[in-house]
Length: 291
Image (cartoon, rainbow, N blue to C red; front, side, top):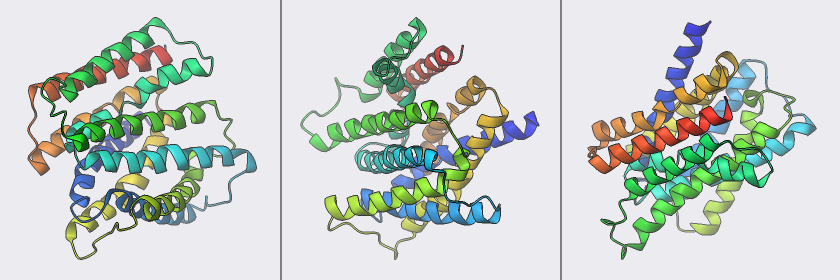
C-alpha cells in the first residue's frame, strides 16, 4: 500500500538522519575506525538474526558475491571508516551533508563506464559543488588546521566510495534481493573494518564504561542500520525510483536539525545555503537519472 511505503520512507529518513549525531556522541568513547568496526559487527549480528527470523537467511548465490564484496568494501567499510574519521573534526550536521554527496560523484563515474549523462546531470553537479564550497567556507577556514581540512576531504571521499557501490549495484544482475544479502555484506565489512582498525589504529579503543559508546552502537548497529536499510529496500520496491530518491533527501536535513537540537550545533547561514544548493543539485541529478 502507498501509505505503508511512505511510512517506511519516513522511517528510513529518521533512522539515517539521526545517525551522524549518534556517531558524534560515540566518538567521545572510541576511536573512529574501531567505532565503525563495532557498528558493522553489531549490525551484521542483528541482520543475521532478522533474516533468520524471516526464514530468508541463506548463502548468497555465486553471481551475487561480487555485489556482496563491493558493497561490503566500498559502501560499508570505506564509507563507515572515512565518514567517522572526518566526523572527528567537522560538525555532525555538515558531515552528514558532505558524506551524502554520492549522487554527485555518480555523474563522473557514470561517464567513466560509458553511460550517458544529460545536461541536467552536469547542471546538478555544478550546483552541488557550489554548495560544497559554500558549506566549507574556504575564506573563513583555518588553512593551518590540517585536521579540519583533511576532515572535510575524508567526508567527500566517503561520498565517493558510496557512489562506487551504487554504480555497481545499479549495473549488477541481482539473483537475491538487497535485503537478503545485507547480513553477508555487513559480515564482509566487519572483517575488513577490524583488520583496518588494527592496522591504522593499533592503539584504538572502544570504551564500554562510557554510555556514549552504547548510545551510538545500539542505535546505529541494532536499530538504524538494519531497520533503516529494510525500510529503504521496501521503499525502493514499492515507490517509483524518483519518489524514493527525492524523499531520502530529507535525511541530511533531519541530520542538521537533530545535530542542532541534540548537540547544540548552530545552523549558520553558510550551512543552510550550502545544504540547499547541495540538495538541489542532487535532486536535479536524480531527475536526470530517472526522467
